[in-house]
Image 1 (cartoon, rainbow, N blue to C red):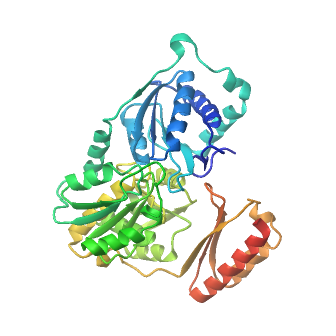
Image 2: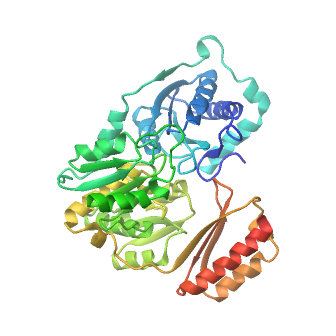
Image 3: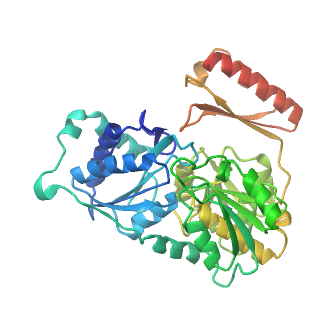
Length: 444
């Protein structure tokens, strides 16, 4: 299996090599060419040094099967989703490993409508990839070979798109916002958008050098953001990850706002403004039980799907919802975007704070969470969980103690994710330690 839960990902130069990328690029090009309209594919990337290597291999592959490639350089993942449709391309490709360390990199594919590929499409690409004879003999000749060009001014289209998602009757005049761009793909766009909407902007970690993306900064490491919010007495702190599809928020007291609280507040805000389709929200199985209880009080129903923003997106389409989110900070605002957009989500948080006219520490703390423990356990092997001796007994024991559990492998890293939720926090910690010991013995 080549694809994980969010595209293809691995260590650059080890799993993600130029030869691998060329083979994958040819396979993807052949897949998209079956229903080609424009014979154009958009390619963007984040700020990792390895992006140059991967981009060149990918462009070679796509042009070899007849595609004209538009290269737009470092841009957020949601910009690729938007621009693929906006520029009438057959597909879009983002070179990024999102929140992973800079040594990793990856590739995400979008269809002509800006949606991430579903599993059926990924399987088709994997099937072509495995047919080495087909891949080897697919190169066009003469005028059939595609071309490539680099366009640097598409950032303006995306900035306008982001600003159009912000309520036209509101302004951020008088609001002070600290933005941590994680030295990633949002380092140019985010400060411009907030400044043009009137905010007093302080930017940190906005000097990418190819190796400092996500380095103790951004959405996974909000400590510095918290300190800067308190230092500048800001109204809000905004942290993006490496490809700017994820949002973590810090309130005016420097406290990190839990993802489920953010989902609850945004959903309620949209509902109050008659903008929440079907009075329905799509979330994943990672969400806290307290979120459902809160949404019930707001007259909002909740649809639960598998972890991964492409599964959230698919469930939104199925249930005709226009709001879906993950606790980790991927928020899809379906009226404007087909994928998680950290900058756009931050604008919506800012809008609701302007309307509330209260400190963010009050507005963004609408309910108390049920005790929950989340552990990411490094592992060497990914054996089927149900085949591990003693696993079923461990699960039965959790259920006897009325502990909600979600145990799954990461789709992008060698990690086992353990989520436990219940009423007794001491018991949760004890059971988590038991699970960690158990899996350490079984999985290395």
